[in-house]
Length: 214
Ligand code: TMP
Image (tube, rainbow, N blue to C red; front, side, top):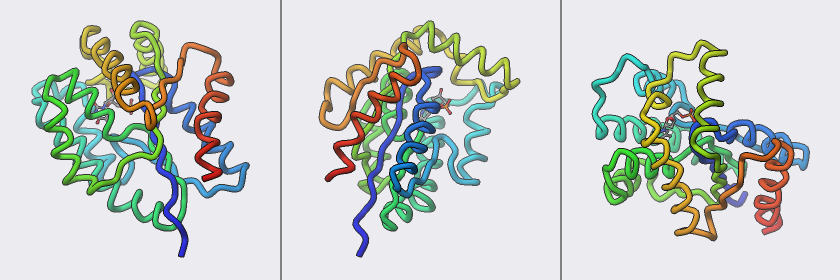
């Protein structure tokens, strides 16, 4: 029987560079002979991508925080069941660009819905699945937002509803990630994303490497 693969998540404020870091890690793991499955939230599966459009459409200003939370978990439930658990069962490594920690930070803390509610819905949607390692790429709020805005302008992105929240919202997000890393130091590693991409990638690799030996 194959043993269950490792589940690693990337987290961070908008514009932190986490998606670039995920791609670099995936490439390095493949070079090392690992089978890697990449996914992202909100989105991932075809059904999740449809939910993503509703979540991030900048026209959907009436969306309530609880609707937002449930749609995030609807995406995740589909992703966990359709893609993530089967890949892990086949012994593959799964890298996810965001997972439940995003909901904890954005909806639980920044929107004020509370951690308890997030974990309650998580139990239903994820059925006990939690990351083995979470890499939080930290970036100061202004730099992150500037990067996210210039990317959105470049790609003529319309999925900007969450990027467009007030700066105080994004500051709460950053602080909540820092708090999460302090609360769960064995699972969650905070990595300074303000440095050059290769240096950040090296630190990501140093956090992941010990898990590959186990
Ligand atoms: P992305 O830019 O990493 O694709 O994420 C899109 C936005 O969705 C980003 O602003 C973070 C937000 N988000 C939440 O608010 N809650 C969640 O659970 C997830 C996965 C993302």
